[in-house]
Length: 324
Image (tube, rainbow, N blue to C red; front, side, top):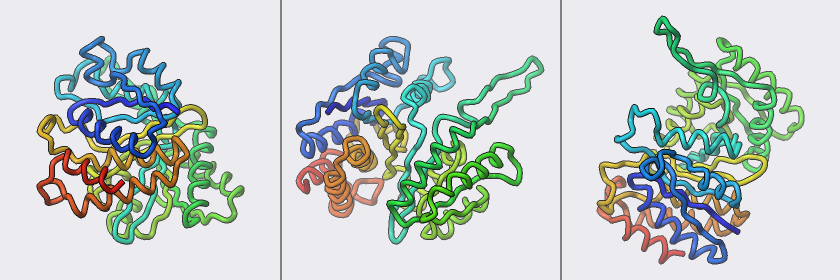
């Protein structure tokens, strides 16, 4: 099997190196190939997602991506983030899994990733009016809903669908299609919740949730809220899955250019994303659990500055490797 690693920008190469080290301990038979992506790729050739990188990703079994972004390109015509949106669309990884767990909380947000407001028509009219269009097709809603029901069936069999059906036509479509899909999953309890209430409920009593499914922008916001409730973005992993081809596995946090190269970047989220890769990308659930347990242990024994300790990236990586 083959993994393409896109180290990314800022602290990306540092945390990616830790993840690759763990992968080689757990899955020495898996080939790992690095390819340029993000700001580094723009500097090298003017494109955040070079065609050679995209071709390598298509041919891989999974893609492990570090964080991207660089202040040099903020507001530029060509930005690292454009490469990420294109990668998601080209691989059609429509279901973004964002687990959040801590102290009695164990929820999974399934965010639709390649439709909605971020992929609709947008622009600025002659009079200065700016617009962004939110569109969904029934097929887009159905496939992510079905994925969420399947995941809920393997957990505690409760699915919360979040929308704004009292205001938005796309949300009314969303609710209608989710109800239709629910007929195929009578063993999963379904509830609907408006997004503003959902934000309050995640902040105040997140333990009530099992699996949440929602559209792109709502999922973007609510998954960050869930991460904050359960320890912060620095610990949050993600997996983006499609029906065919490789998934993309990446930490949620940014590239943190202010601490790049100082050896204090916390690789926990990257390692947890690697665990998701082992489970959902390579089918190695037992190895995924081993890595998760090693990271949890290192967070307790070798805390880093963002966790109240003084460990370095290397010390944390050593602790994980020793546990494995």
